[in-house]
Image (tube, rainbow, N blue to C red; front, side, top):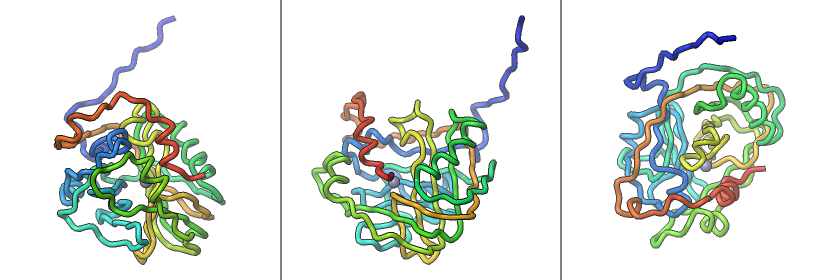
Length: 255
Ligand SMILES: [Zn+2]
């Protein structure tokens, strides 16, 4: 039997709305290249939702509705200035392709499982952004203080300097998640990665635990990847062949 051959409709000149823009690579960050190369003004031109970090690893970045928030190691959240640079982030213009009624979500694993079930159904080999808005029973975030040179590998920084904040309870805000497929695991975190910022912009960071009920997840599938490699001398000489899988798992944390 001969199966009907289907042909695609892809173009290489396509729509920026389906593009995930990735600055640098996770492997580069893991190795300690925290030199910011791309400005927030530039990042904002590539999308309105995303996550990452800042020059010198000065806190966790979460972009919501086109505004970039910097959740710093001292627990403060400030709007990032347009001339602040990033060594690592990913952003996309958000469009809702899928929605999921979440029910009771009492752990990160439960959240990831629910989102992944839909991604598996639609396209686990694409990249996805998700946003969940509303009041969360509890969110636990972490950040870290700015690093000084000589920069150490990320795993070393997180083991020694990660600041785990007290949980925020009954907190209104936005959880932003990004999904990369396994085959891009050295480019960004394989699977899900979440950051949070509260509506009153008093709490935020990389999410380690979550508890929420009755919220809706909006998902945006993207099938284009725009990579921006760092234009700095540090990147040029990095050995990017090493297997960092276990180090990445340690740094991402969350239960
Ligand atoms: Zn993070």
